[in-house]
Length: 79
Image (tube, rainbow, N blue to C red; front, top):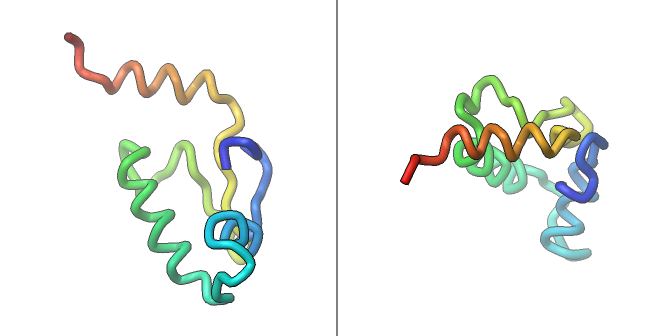
């Protein structure tokens, strides 16, 4: 997803890239995995800032990676 940040990736293309050509057509496992990723990445997974759902199509990751780095630095504990 990071290589295609800012672009919508379809459910099938993500599943094919992650699980290969033998991935099942049901995207339920993908939705569960994306929810888990959101819980780890987002401050509020219910209102995503980095990983967006494009309903009926797939997912899109935030394009500006400098924002990701800045937010991550702000959330990390100070030594």
